[in-house]
Length: 468
Figure (cartoon, rainbow, N blue to C red):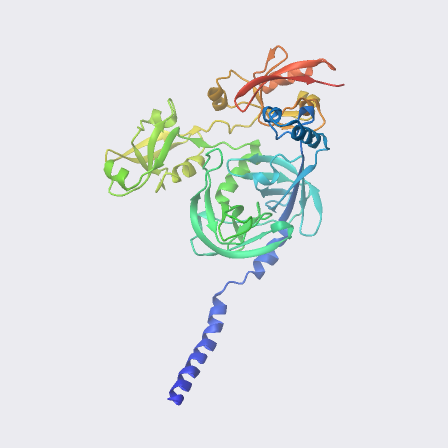
């Protein structure tokens, strides 16, 4: 019996020894990818001077709430507001796409930044210019004044498959040029933004991504960038194996538009949609749950003009399968406005085909911004025109929305905040940024001028004084 067990153990040990080299050989070797691409990955440091409101109160405190506090607490908050504003800093990653210094990163890495610094792998640092930034896709395009830079190779995110190996390079928690690897867990993940936008079919991976990796590249085994690391799902603030990257096909289109116009234009159908579950599929005469169910139509929108009706279920758009409702905005957003595309749908359980001319999503056109050097700089404001959707929602003929407030200027002293809508300055209505610039440029100095604004849906007046 002992001899039998000895033979079994010997055979088992031999099997382990012979299998180990095969398993090791099957694992990918990332060293060459890292050597070839680390020089094209950058660390991004952005800073924003914290703003403080009027009257010595912190800008994030609602004055109406402040009045309801006991005197001792109100006094403490007012003291806090009188302190010198501290600089806010953010950190992320990015990668160089051209030898003359164009860099891709995330919108949230540079959003609201007063200055952006790019640090290369060889420790050189450059002040970067934000060419354009797109909140809907969470992408930003930067430019540094340099030539002869090492660049990455962009791949094909449409060709990736679930289960294949991928590699990330970035600066998690400030640890420069850290490398982590994993596999593609899923494709086409739908992650709506806070405003309900859903135009990015995210790549899900189990690569360890942490704060600081944002904007960094996701490589395939060919050493090509197939995604831009953007988000993580976490309960602790660190990686738990759920990370999401923007497909490079989306980033390529956004970057080209930002470089050419400074803004991104997207397709629009003018529909409200929902998923089709088993019960709805049965009620609409479908053999299984599929497609995007049209629950609402925008009057006069592209879909209504094309003959699409409430209750239709779209299953294909421009040759792209619409398996579930989230697939539809992913497909529409990539189509150039004015393009006619084929739509396949089910109506009352029967297949139909029609053509629709894709419209333009409101609010995506290049914005006219009053900024440094113009009238906006006189009071310390950056403003932009209201979109048609904003005007319609708030029933306004015009106005400008505050994009940023410069510390120490008249606007900051008056208590203006990003997001405020300026409808009137003095006795002059403000309908556009051009109106705003001409009105502010003519304001007298050293006297208070009433300014009518809308904040969180509530209209009111504040007094603005330009000290010159």
